[in-house]
Length: 137
Ligand code: FES
Image 1 (cartoon, rainbow, N blue to C red):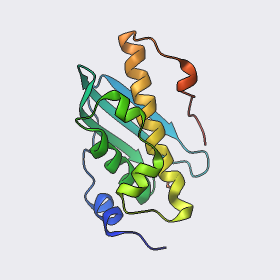
Image 2: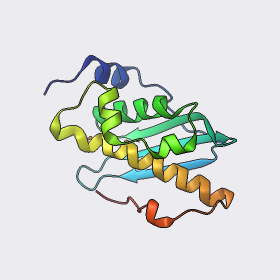
Image 3: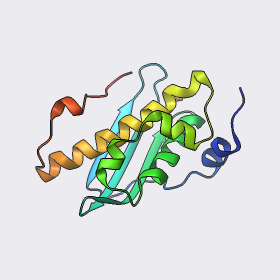
Image 4: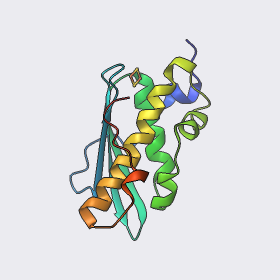
């Protein structure tokens, strides 16, 4: 299996690792397929993600995907974080092997779950249909 230099970089030197004690939104998802879990923490100010961190217990691609996802959404409005797709994460990593694409799906789901958690905590109304519950994939 061949990984891009970017995947290797974000795996070996992941950005934004760690628990955020004062997070405004936290999203945790897991994959039934492999048992890996990913947690994304968001700090939000005036609708902008000012900080994003992650904790991932999983494969190297899951770590690289969560690292890249936090980089992509930091400084961005919530609408942009919600529009983040796993394809965008995979592209930003210069591509992922077919059988590792599901790892990037976890990143998309964890970001969305964290935004939903923020809406819940802040009593911001939303359409639940826009946020399917990601328990297992
Ligand atoms: Fe499970 Fe990568 S193998 S997230």
